[in-house]
Length: 396
Image 1: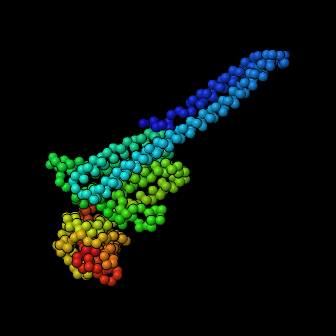
Image 2: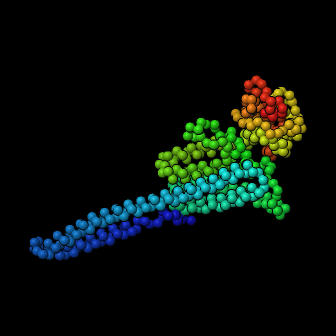
Image 3: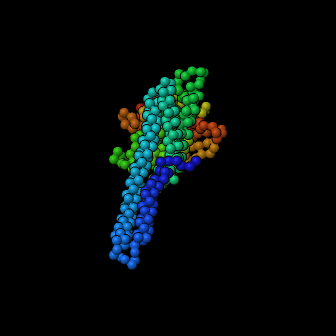
């Protein structure tokens, strides 16, 4: 389909139409002057009329045509630029509003994990998805609002967000149809879209800790990688146009966004994410998650106090405890069936802090199955003593 955006209209037709009319008028005056002028009587009335009135009038008409056309062109071009700027600003505001709704829904679902809130917030996200679809369509037919490379990147980014949200919508539809009535709880299995959405908000370690004076400082937590990929390729590029970034600046921004997407793909490897999630689940004391999702049947552990425990002993001690942050995650060995991960888990305690080195062995019988934790060994804390939280339970 051809672009039918506001910038594709033939704004130059009217100014050039006026110019053409005035040029025709000028040519007519010159033609009449030539017909009226009498060479044998250059001082006669007809000759004076031809040279003094008609030819001078032709010169005035030409100059007037140039000035009028220039002013008309400048006015139309300025008005066109203003219309384009207003449209870019409108699309950016709509894009920002959509993102704010998604981010707010994430925070509300984190604070209130009940079925009523889930139902309400998913209805909001349904509306957001529809508006994003309309924004993408307007960008598609926007003509010269954006450079072609940026227009396609914006459309791709919005599409990625829509794909991500549609996964949640499909889950919501299945949930709402359960047994013909709204279930009493929202989806809670590890693979549930809403669980991953909320979990990403809690994983503060996924972002660098920067000083508030740093220009790259961001609040803790964040959105899932699939969402961030789409947001940066759409909203970030649209913002550059709103603030009139130069072509060179936009090219540098595209390169930066591309690098962020690449880095995020590495950072958000499934094993990396799983090991970050372990710390979150330990902090809230999610026994169900460890029992049903993570631990292998013959799981064993050596906690930081250098004792040992089996699966049942570990689960018996799971409970809400000190906040943890997982750092320095390294996938030291990985095949389709076995993986060894090392990391540092930092705990903030009332009487200080503790940082424990962890080594974790994950297994699975097929590549399409989720990883299960078979063995977990912790070194004593780096400060040389075992805090009370680590003595009370095998978590670290």
